[in-house]
View 1 (cartoon, rainbow, N blue to C red):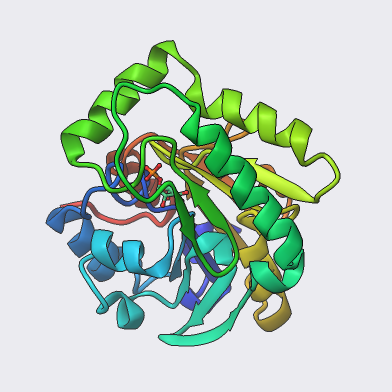
View 2 (tube, rainbow, N blue to C red):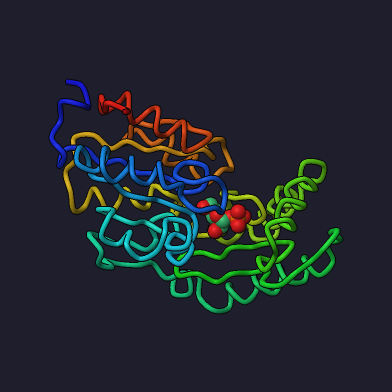
Length: 257
Ligand code: M1P
């Protein structure tokens, strides 16, 4: 049976945000947004599963209206679950790791970053979220052009990959996982709290016939990798929102006019 012949409530489409619904850390484009809400949403349940927190999802997808537009929102890899506009649950990294381990980790990262030479540094080197930490060697408080500068710098110096290696060694005794989902930072969370976490919620509460996942960071170490290879989903690799649109048009037999 083809996907296009299924009922709306039999299909769930799970979208990564950066690189899939939007270009990295930019807002969704109006034509794509209209396509998603007017052509795709009537045919299937739609959901986001992003590495970023809910505030960044609001910024990129044009505000709180997404609470009403998407059937589900899964910020922080689904460690926060929003079901039809209402928070249904969230994970807590403090409780999971405990203060002593958390403090040891944060102190080590800050010490390591203080010794790291980069062309520029700004502020907010660790962003503390509900279920994860986001570590940014340059500091999250940077401008778009400073962000672009880091992207170029990293093409020659694997700053984040090198730092992750150091952390993996130093914290081999702690069940932590590291993933690179964006351009200037990496996410740190307990093992298994990757994007497959969103599937735990879906499986416990719904019974979709098909779950499709769309993402760009699908290589090992990228934050779409684990869900991309998960046998519970049908995966689609994309590089841009245009790819996502093309695949959706084909999958759901949408007349794209
Ligand atoms: O959604 C992908 C990533 O987006 C941001 O990454 P960066 O600022 O490095 O481009 C972060 O919110 C990160 O946590 C997230 O995985």
